[in-house]
Length: 478
Image 1 (cartoon, rainbow, N blue to C red):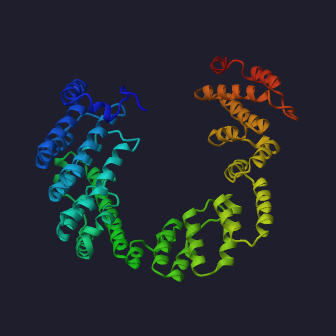
Image 2: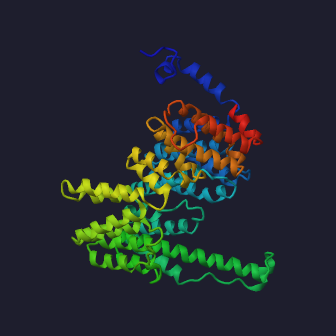
Image 3: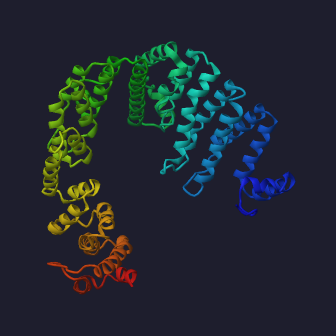
């Protein structure tokens, strides 16, 4: 049973309304975010209309603000935005969907002036706007907005999508737009496509302080933005209407041969029951199989071959994909489709291929993912001279995964990172290298036979002889 002093809703209710009110006033003192939240709750308690006024006032303040938002004050901003969005969703829209939709559009319009003064390297702020954008479709449907009016609003929004806040808007609004709204939006986009951005007269260039070159560059950027908007919107409308050919038409013949684009087209053709056409786009894609091949293209080709009942060809392709990329998923798919007992022999053949792969680290990653820790350990021991200690993102988890049962292999991975860090004088990694060094000392007590490799005490002597002046490392190691 929880203590009466445990911080939970039931225990707080026992304090009574008067005491809780006093505490809220005390806690909110000095906190603008907390005060705004309380004012918003009070407004909502009066009526949804009052809550709407409070939200509108706050959104205007955020849009007009000029102070820069850095990582230190980003969290209060996000809390503030989430509070306004929650009020629209939970207090205003259920009572008055039309007012809720108007406020939600206003909320979205805050994005452009906000991002002009905001560091959103973490992507947290844009995430709030993506949540708000997703809500537009739900509230627009409840509000019963006329389709043409909603399409016009969508176009204006897409023209202000410089920070990606409206990404996916057409798909989100499709249920509310319906066939009529989508047709109207398509017509508006086609008019926009036929209306190039006008070149400003030379006098206007000078009036705003541009030279002719600067004005020309600005005009080119606007024209590119218009063309990009048209292409993206027409593709999204084609998807919403289920018009595969209209989707394909947005790509020129050369672009259709890009593997990822070919995969997108093939997926839509396959969904439309046009598997042969899908295979045509897949096979015409310009794929350099001597280098990395996009998984999207490989997956699409497999789906098309399966749809055409070309199962033997699909199996051969799965094996080829595994051989090239050492992808566990393709190997699992290959083995799953083999008759009983044949899969055992095929798996052994796959393990031998991975062990002999030209790249040590891809092979190591494969054995760890499969998982086959014994083979991963054997690989590190047999090919220790090929270990690239710069790849800590693979070697660190490898050492961790192998340390319990294969301490020698784990030690070799750790030593590779230590040696690289010290030899390359990567001083920012000295703390990590010192930690790896301590782990080597702990693992040494569990290694009965170092074989051809240096025992830990000899490794320490060599390390001090070669890097004795890397004082920062040794300070971290003490």
